[in-house]
Image (cartoon, rainbow, N blue to C red; front, side, top):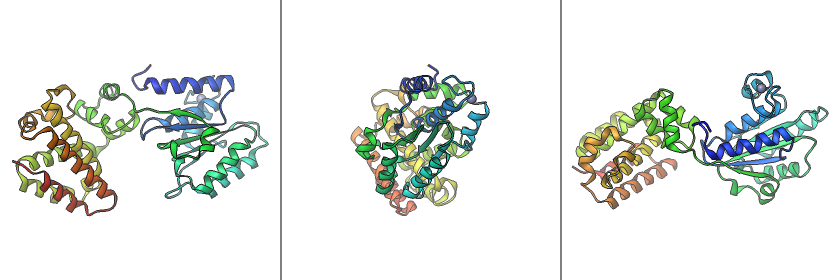
Length: 325
Ligand SMILES: [Zn+2]
């Protein structure tokens, strides 16, 4: 097993590889798991493995067939994403037409539906008919974070594969080996369920700044309240960090959790180990239940922002509620 792949994903890849080699792939798969747990990469890998001219059950990633899958221009491979908020019946019909048109060719056809739980009822029913009468050699891969929301009849006709979040310690080690600074690696893996997502975050130009901004804001909130209000106005009211507010609040949750870790004497578990000097000083200024309450307040602000509350006001109120020092 490589450090990049968990036992769970290795097991899934083994099942699918065996299916490719033995020509015993199912007509439909449901890849169920949280965002960032590798469903998309696995779907791309499976399509490559099916078409690869030299893979023998694996994807070489280099032959013309593999490259066409990667670049999204393979004629027998179709990728469907929600059109706006949902996957619509027209998209499923389009796909059926496309396949009917090409059904004279002997090659296997594969389609992926991303966020399959967001199919409309009509789209689901249309897909169901398609699954019930599998034309020649067609394979469906349904990607979802919420597979339970799919129609039971779709579930019963598909093979269910569960993707689990990758182990954070393994991801951290992999990122550090790739040259990501340790402090950013540890932070990123706590915000992503899989290595590709964690890597993208750790390498994003804004990520280090978001972390620094949050540390400043959290520290000022606990020590110098007026300075915290100023930081909100200067850094979070507009501009790049304003767009990253959700991540900044996620980071704040991690820092509050670290306060509890500190109280419990578990320094090695801390995400913000580089901030331990001032945090150790503050950790015992409140009871554990107060830190938990602060976390609830942050989560509450996140919820309100998702329903389009005024972000500056929401954060200012948060700071007022949480202030100290
Ligand atoms: Zn290949």
